[in-house]
Length: 113
Length: 110
Image 1 (cartoon, rainbow over the protein chains, first blue to last red):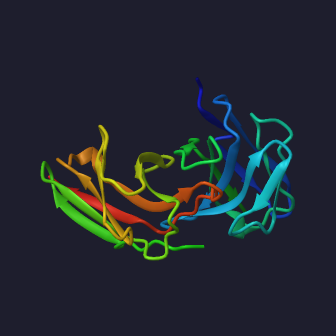
Image 2: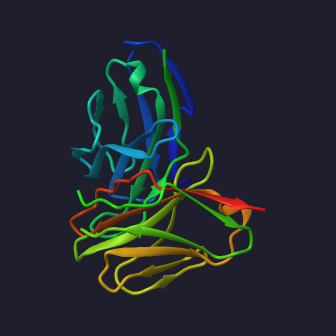
């Protein structure tokens, strides 16, 4: 199993540009989520999904869109990048309907200039 | 959302036990207590979880207060590789959303 994979590892954007951060898992997990982590801070939940076709907002959803068309993939879209979105982004997945442990990807480091 | 409270930082000597506390006074009766840790420049990794009884695994032990308002993660013999930020959170049936606080930064002194 590859686990949770994220691409790209690093990205630099200019203000106003759009991009999609990719996340995939091969563990047949129903639950997937996106977090951002600013320097020296904890993780904040952006969006999450409990299954294909179902998404919901987390703590800091503004400026981000998600969709979940397959169980395996959960892309995060930045519509118009802003410097405040400079952060490290982590994707995670787990089985749903219970207290299952969550598996995290290695992260994408995004810089918006 | 029910919140958890942890000390910002702790220090421990290498090869000694470490007790990391967490308060979760508003946790619901069906939520499990989860612990994760984040090593420098890495994504978080799962450590342990439990509901009411104390739990052990190869990484750590989890001691849960009888009233479930607090818990303690126990690293029995800290090594330098245990230096990380440790997060306490909760998750359960019908409450899959997993949120994190700022965690406890654990420093291990050689």
